[in-house]
Image 1: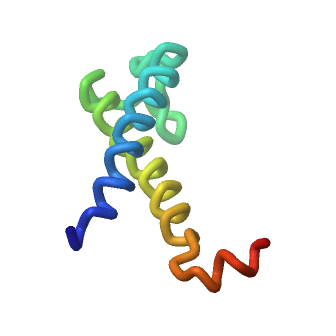
Image 2: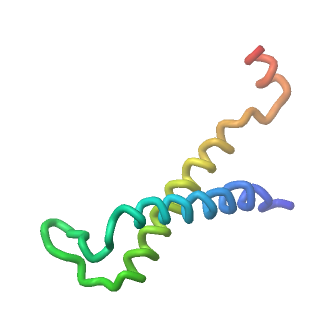
Image 3: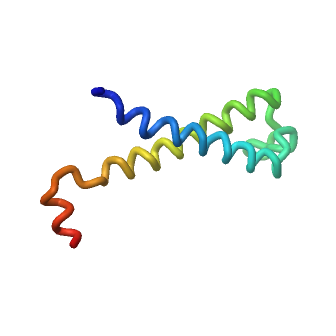
Amino acid sequence: MRFRWLMWVLWPAFLMGGAATAVVFSVVDPGDLNFFGHPLDASREAVYTIGFLVAWFFCALSSGLTLYTIPTKLEDTEELE
């Protein structure tokens, strides 16, 4: 129960990371990507994996910040009313 918040952050981030990766790579071909003017020497699978991990990280960061800002006490919610 102690680490239940990980499920609340990482699972939605995983789903949105997958959706974001699908949207981005349906528009962008990994073979056409350049890094500081030089073509990438990585395989398509490596670019897909890195793209997914970056999207997952940013979605997890967003979910984590949302969870962090949720009021934890009843007094905090009374201030909003």
